Amino acid sequence: MSEITIVGMGLAGSCLAWQLWRRGVAFRIIDNNEIGSSHVAAGLVQAVTGKNCTVSWRYKEFVAEAEPFYREIETILHDQFWFPLEVLRLIFPHEEKRMIGKLFSGESLAWVKGELHDHAWPTAKAYILHGAARMDVPKFIRATRAFFDSHGLIDSTDHAIAKTSDITVWCGGAAGLLRQQPIVWRQRCAKGEILTIRAHGWQQTRLVVGRGWMVPIGDDCYKVGATYDWDSVATGTTKEARTYLEKLATELAAGDYEVIAHEAGIRPIVRKSQPVIGPLPDDPRQVVFNGLGSKGSLCAPTVSRQLAEWLISGAMIDEDLSSLDYFAKLSNP
Ligand SMILES: Cc1cc2nc3c(=O)[nH]c(=O)nc-3n(C[C@H](O)[C@H](O)[C@H](O)COP(=O)(O)OP(=O)(O)OC[C@H]3O[C@@H](n4cnc5c(N)ncnc54)[C@H](O)[C@@H]3O)c2cc1C
Image 1 (cartoon, rainbow, N blue to C red):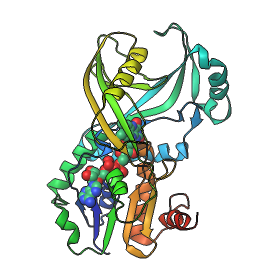
Image 2 (image 1 turned 30 degrees about the vertical axis):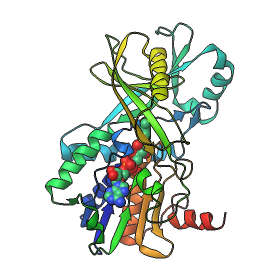
Image 3 (image 1 turned 60 degrees about the vertical axis):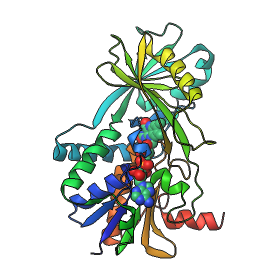
Image 4 (image 1 turned 180 degrees about the horizontal axis):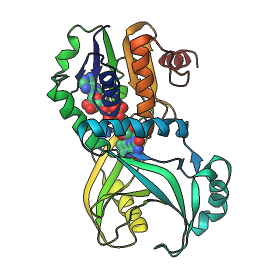
């Protein structure tokens, strides 16, 4: 088997590393210690999303593989990263006509448990949805890094890429896409900002979704988010986003709160949050795994497994994930 180097240790690089590790395949990881979006992500995994209440692409299949994958790593690392949740979907009067129709039709209907009548938002209707989870991505990345570091598999210096390696897998997230590494991408990266708040005595256990969302992370603390900005991929937080997020928190928290953190990251997007994996068209030793978009927690286990199987035995990569298909369409739009 050729030596594999994984460049970048966010969610993509970490999941691929675990897939290789559990199959006994040798690899090393190079990470330059920049703060990628995995260090900021809320890690929400939910079936029904967005203003149109649509069911996420390949949701059932991805979630069925995600939970056991993360659970297996929890067992190895003696920690918890995957937190199952119910969703409280708030629907306000101005959107009621449109939204209720969408929620109670098509694939979304299967995820609705029923209406909650006793709740804290007097003007809204609240519906309970099942099948969601929060993946604590930042904790997962830290614990994964510590584990592979203790096995001597991580190198934090850029020059390490120059060392001979048979296969290099580029998992650089938004930094890789913006630097066009290792090839020219058509990226659609979107900046996102997020608040962490402490709400006093609220004790909400569900993920509350309205205009934005608010997810419990323990000790009456919550993440509130998130902004989407395709025009600016500058790092750092902004005043405008802070104002918007505080307004969301006020709508969703139904009580007093204090802000304990405000963070920003760049989502690595190349098409509609559908990742791209596999070799470069003109060099099969250069391999990519990028474009996890805004739903990386959900799809990274399946996508990393397909890539690992391709690296090990040349197994087929699904057409809608395949790098060869993606780059062919880029050159012949
Ligand atoms: C505000 C916000 C909220 C989000 N919420 C959610 C959510 O609720 N659910 C969800 O599933 N996803 C969410 N996401 C998206 C999620 O963060 C991504 O899907 C996923 O974490 C991307 O992982 P990645 O490994 O591709 O990229 P990254 O996390 O950016 O990791 C890439 C790593 O590669 C390293 N790197 C890059 N180039 C090099 C190089 N040349 N040499 C060495 N190292 C290199 C970088 O330092 C970085 O550590 C959110 C993102 C943001 C910004």
